[in-house]
Length: 96
Image (cartoon, rainbow, N blue to C red; front, side, top):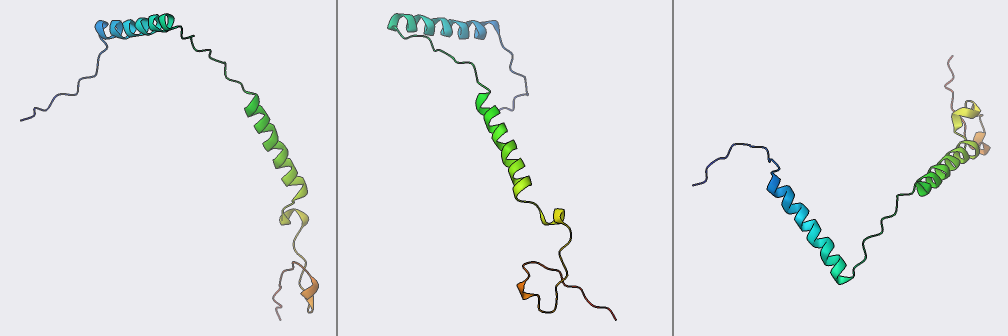
């Protein structure tokens, strides 16, 4: 019933390009007739991205300076026999 077609790349013909250009011309003409102003395109701004990048750098530095990682302050102290008062300590297994 259906015949299998070969994979032929779509080629742009002169008539299809002319048709698209004719559609654009028709649209511009309609805009002028209806009094629709053309779109005012703004150039993209990098300021919001620069502000975001600066904020992330400051946040990263604040975390590094005011929230130090435990390994930076040296190893944890050894737990003592009654070391319940210590917040963080490491157990050492005694070898005899």
